[in-house]
Length: 88
Image (cartoon, rainbow, N blue to C red; front, side, top):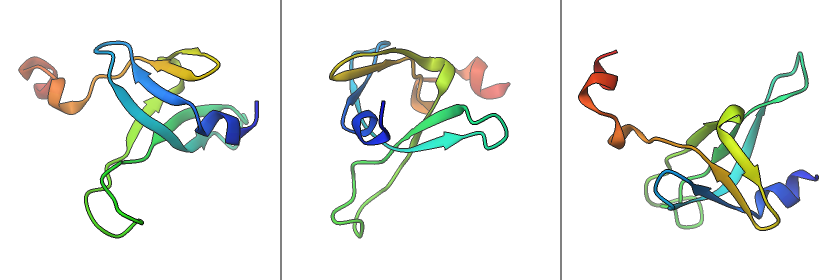
């Protein structure tokens, strides 16, 4: 699969069914040549200038399925963490 084909797919979180966005970048381990994580670019920018640009980093192990149109991932954002998980 080409990276360009990978980037046009919608990324959906299976935990809540929300669309997270599209893959903007890929983190590759240069020693092994394997993909370590995918990075979803933030949606809040206008022409790259205005707004908040938060990236979501999804480790490769959290990608559950790569379909024809959608990539299903398991993602738990910081806002969803319980008090116990934040303390650790």
